[in-house]
Length: 273
Image 1 (cartoon, rainbow, N blue to C red):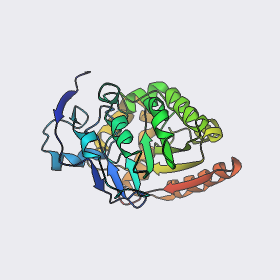
Image 2: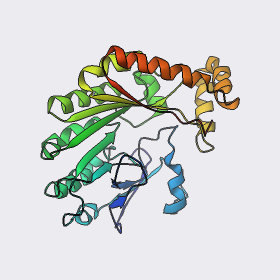
Image 3: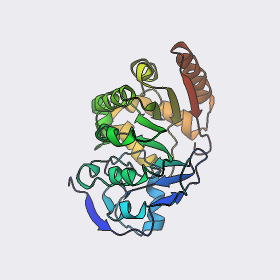
Image 4: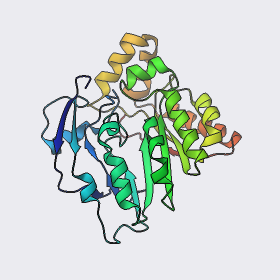
């Protein structure tokens, strides 16, 4: 499948305790991700999986995941996030349906369900998600430009289909948000994203592009080949560790969300600059 090495595996567990502040547990039905985002931070997972292949070139499918999701009241009322280091609705989900079947196993348990994805496929599972008393779907966007998106996140859904999914989820009565992440300086169309998504999003979350040793070369290569005029600006922001850009952008985001009467949850990281 598009050069992706797919392997079916049996996992030891599927619902794991979370180290994230906003979730009690996480579910990652897959190891790896087809989207191939050049900015992905999850490559560190290779330390634990033993893969030698490049991140984005393989996916392990936890085929026994649904069977591992059975519980006896231990998740009732707990926040379970799908997912933390993969996309639960990456293209392979259309074939395997792991996310859907795990959700079905959890309905009687009635945890608080949080979905974060950059795929329109989430709309397929509205019938299941509506059976939870508390379910939220977050749609991740970094740009509205289809060509730019294809370069930054090659196998992710188009920005249009993500916005359509957001609308479908909101119309179905689910809580929704847009995760504007990562914000690429001078590329991400913040004002337009907020304007288009505001009617269908209960709130917005924002995260800046955080350059790390695992993604810095890929991002700079993209700029060199496609937006060379931005290279000096990126070097000023990142190489000089100048946080003024993000401080100014934070104020701009807060004002834009205030204009649309939406909450802005801003998660800017300065440590990786």
